Amino acid sequence: MTAMVTVDDALTRYEPVIGLEVHVELGTVSKMFCGCPTTFGGEPNTQVCPVCLGLPGSLPVVNRAAIESTIRMGLALNCDIAEWCRFARKNYFYPDMPKDYQISQYDEPLCTDGYLDVTVPLADGGSEVVRVGIERVHMEEDTGKLTHTGGATGRIHGADYSLVDYNRAGIPLVEIVTKPVTGTGGLAPAVARAYVAALRDIMRSLGVSDVRMEEGSLRCDANVSLAPPGQPWGTRTETKNVNSLRSVERAVTFEIRRQAGVLDAGGHIVQETRHFHEDDGTTTPGRSKEEAEDYRYFPEPDLLPVAPDPAWVDELRTTLPELPAARRARLQEQWGISDFDMDSLINAGAVELVEATVAAGADQGAARKWWMGELSRAAKDRGVELAELGVTPADVARIADLVGQGTLNDKLARLVFEGVAAGEGSPDEVVAARGLELVSDDTALLAALDDAIAANEDAVAKIRDGKVQAAGAIIGAVMKATRGQADAARVRELLLERLGE
Ligand code: ADP
Ligand code: MG
Ligand code: ZN
Image (cartoon, rainbow, N blue to C red; front, top):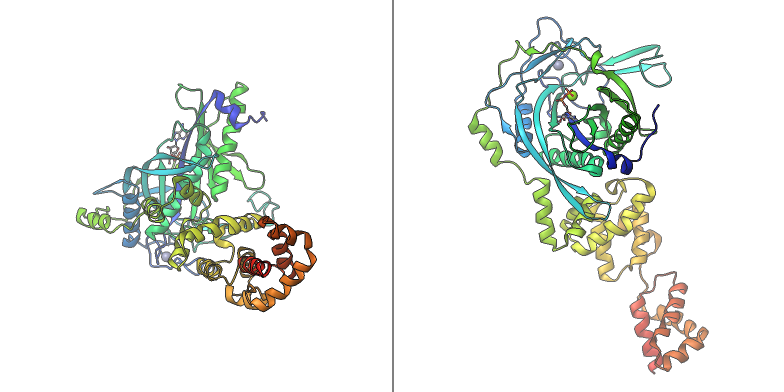
C-alpha cells in the first residue's frame, strides 16, 4: 500500500474534482409501480405483490405522486423538465432484484441541467457559496435488502446463508447526479458534505422525503479524482453508499489523500467503485471498470412514456414552498443579525430550532444565546445533534421567559436545561422538583446578607470608603449561602441600602 499524503500536501500538487450521486427514497404512500405500502420496518416480505416480486404476467403502472415529487425536486434544483421521456430497463442478475432488471431512467431523465448554490462553512467561522451543477435528476425503483448471516463482518463472504426482504423492492427512488465540481481545492470535502446537507434540507422543505440517512433513505456515492493543475481531469473512483454527512466528508478526504499517495509514487488510479468504512474512515476497492456489468439498457416496453403537461409543471413551479436558502436570508433580515452570526447558526444546524423558539414566544437574542451557548456545549459533550438533546424549542422559550421574569438567573437556567434534557419533565416541573426558583423574598435575603456583612468587615469598610467593587465579595457570600438562588441584583440593592443607613 502506498503512503497516505496529508490533504494540504496533496493540494500543493493536485486539484481535486468531485461528483456526487445521491439516491433519495421518496415518501410516497405506495411503491413506484404497484400499490404496495412503503412504511419502514414491516415484517420481511409482507409489503409485496406480483408486480414488485416480478411474477410473470404482472405489469407496472407509474405512480403519479412520485413523478410529481421528482418534478418538484427538479424545479427546486433549477432544472429543465423533460416534456417527454421514457423509463429504461437496467438488466442485472442479483438476488435483491426479483425481476432481474431494475426499472430506471438512463438517457432520458425527467430533469436535467440545473444547479444548487451551497453555503460551505469555512474554518474561520465564515462561509463561501459554491454553485454545484446538477447533471440530471431521474427516477428509479429501490432494490430489496439482503442480510448475510453467519460471517464475521455481515458481508456475503464467509456467511452461512443470506436472507432477502423485498419490502423495499419497488420503493420510488430519485437519483440526483451532479456535474463535476472543480476549483474547490481543499474545500472539496466540505463542499461534498454541504451539498448533501443542502439537498437534504430542500427535500425536507418540499416534503418529498423524510430523508433519514440512518434508515438509508438518502445514500450518496462520492466520485473523486485528482490531477495536476491545468491538466485534464484524472481518473475517478466512486465510493458507494456513504450514508452520513460526516462520512461523505471523510470519504472524499480519504480519497484525496490516498490518490495523491498513489500518483506521487508514479502509480495510476484505477477506475473502480470503492467501499467506505465508518470505523476507520478508509475506503477499499470494490468492482473495477473492467469487471463492471453491461446493463444492456433499453426502453422499458411495459410502460408508457412520461409526458408531463407543461401547464401542470408551471403549476408545480408556482406552488413550490419557500426553499431553505431563501428562508435563511429572510430570517437573517428579520432577526437583524450579521452574516457571521447567521453562518454560525447554519453551521451549528440551529436555524430551524431558533426559528421555532422565536415562534414559541422567545426573543431572537435569547433563543440564539441558549441554542448556541449552553445547548451547543451540552450537545457536543454528549456527541449528539442539537435536535436530539431532548430539549424542545418550546422548552427553551419557557426557560428564557422564566429568566426574563426574574424567576431564574442564567446559572439556575442551566440547571433547568440539564433537568429537561435528563427527562425530568417540563421546565416548570424541573424548577418545582429541584427547587430552583430564585430567592427574591427580602426577609430570606436580608438574613443571609446580615450574616455576610458580619463575616466580611474588610469589604464593608471598603464599600463605606466608596470602593463599591468590594460589594462582589459580600454578594458572592450571599449567593453561596443561598446555593446560587439569590437574585444578585436585589442583593446588591439591599446591601447598599443597609450600608447607607
Ligand atoms: P456512473 O454511472 O459511472 O456512476 P454517473 O454519470 O452516474 O456515472 O456519475 C458520475 C459522477 O461522477 C457524476 O457526478 C460526475 O459529475 C462525476 N464525475 C465525472 N467525471 C469525474 C472526474 N474525472 N472526477 C470526479 N468526478 C467525476
Ligand atoms: Mg452511478
Ligand atoms: Zn408491490
